[in-house]
Image 1 (cartoon, protein in one colour):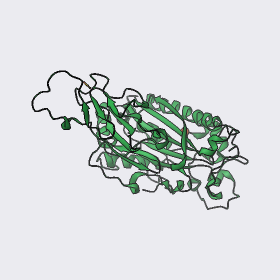
Image 2 (cartoon, protein in one colour):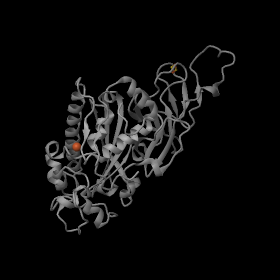
Image 3 (cartoon, rainbow, N blue to C red):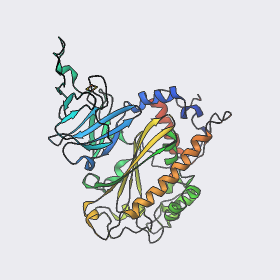
Image 4 (cartoon, helix red, strand yellow):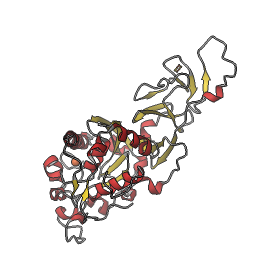
Length: 391
Ligand code: FES
Ligand SMILES: [Fe+2]
């Protein structure tokens, strides 16, 4: 699916039924049909650089532990002990004390490398017929795309890079994502359904009033569009074109930051045309979008917590040499993005509250909301619901 091109909606399209944003039964269906069989982003590999370092993530009620084993290989397991089901790792991240994962409840221990059961802390003779090898940790499939680690809870799932992203990741071909490192992580729980987060991200109708600072940095956003092509009568213009029409940054600005300066740390491999764009995005539904800017990359992960709660985790990636540069102040980009994400969080929460109104059944999409329409079609397909039908 390529949704980067202009694709104005010409037909009247309803937004999704209100109850899809809070109904528990519907939410559970999404967990099983979408979140349990798609490739879900975990983190950038630089966060698991050290051997025996681990990280846990939640996908709905599922907790997964992802670790770097004794041989430097990334492994993923359901975070569940095979004795009586306790969680194994209770922290969001850390480093194992040994090559074993030890259950905090009755101390069963498992090899980090294979998930096999190593030892049972019990003096009694094991019951007849108990076979240790049948009590290994439940494995989770894990794959890497350009330094980005993904898991899939479905053991029969296939890895396909062609279908991993809906918004084209080719825009990132000149960004050295796999060589960059995560310097900072920001997390926030937002009181909204996970789909509301994505809908908000996929349009800019809200930009001028919700994001005044961003709209001043990216003049095209004052026109409430996400692509220059979205302008009626758009024709490709030269690189000198007015940023209101090209989607680039305001005059003198180089990156998404408080003062717009890249502080002499632009990524060398980016071309002039990459830099003129100001920003590029790739999205892998349902779990991440990646933003690329002159001096950094930001990866934002979406995890459903409850039907009306979603966790957002943002990672900032920089080149190693940028982080070593004493003059470079990364806070310049981090605080700017946090401000935007806080503004979006507030908007999403207002949206979620309003949706409960008894007479509100469906909203309506505006022509500029064509990416939301693509998202809705994708969702219906995953849920095996007919596209275009009202529910
Ligand atoms: S539940 Fe893990 S050792 Fe008992
Ligand atoms: Fe926004």
